[in-house]
Image (cartoon, rainbow, N blue to C red; front, top):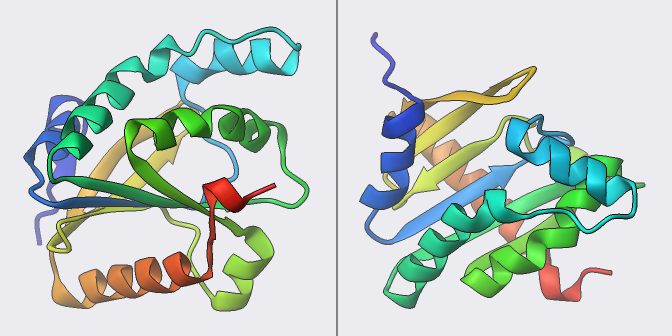
Amino acid sequence: MTVERLSGQSWAQAFTSFRSSAFRWEAQGVYREPAEQGPMSDFLAGRKPDMSFMDGYLARVKQQTVGSLRYSRVRVLTEPLNDYLRFQLSFTHLNVEAGEDIRLLPEVRRCELGLPMEDFWLFDDEWAARMHFGDEGFTHADVVTDDTTLNRFREIRDLAWREAIPFADYG
């Protein structure tokens, strides 16, 4: 069986080719994205971080959600929050303002519900991208189209969405 692997331009194209919805299950406690390292260091040092690394993503979300497309995500949070998640939460309002619907789920609740640690995007409820990470962040995503795995990803999304706290209510 051949697995279609997305990275670089093919990964970017996933976000311009979906027709109705893109859902992210975000379960890692730390992401090591190179573009975030400087801003995170500034945040942790009490300086205002340069968030321009988010500009392209936020512009795309804003443009697409003004139309008929929907972005949503459930982000798992450690308790207490680690430094990375504190940094991430400091700018989550930018995602929300751009049009992304974000909910938060405590790690302990993720465990109680038996939800996985693997991240994925679910596009149009028709196909998924199982994400893979290395020491320097995202490496690639594998396309998932088999019904059994898609059904499991849909179940994860639906359960997590019901159990998670809307970002606006967090705190």
